[in-house]
Image (cartoon, helix red, strand yellow):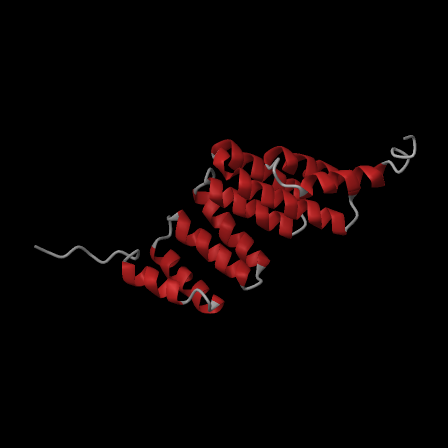
Length: 169
């Protein structure tokens, strides 16, 4: 009998990555090693993308996440993380499209999807893009109705878009 070859997902490899959790550079390098040994596996590459983003490399995270989506175009978590990256990169329309696709594949990701809409809403709020604030806060409120921050953003956007709306009361 021959021993089975050691899988890259052995407890030892996962433990090495876990040990590097508070060291972002080391963690990214460990995930990179693991993805090199499993080029078609989505989860390690997705974790690598997160580790790269933790290092502040948005473009590196985007390209790594795009690699996952090339091989696994319907991976809901990858779609949602890509949406998060698009929102952070100032591309709210792309973010919204990816969130909606992820939700169509896995509706239980509503909470995480709400976070992406909230991030896009806040980015638009900071830029005073009131139409975008209203659109994304409204969709976020649909997805996450228990989040009290969405109605506040909707009210602020409506007030900015139509300052006379409350004057008629």
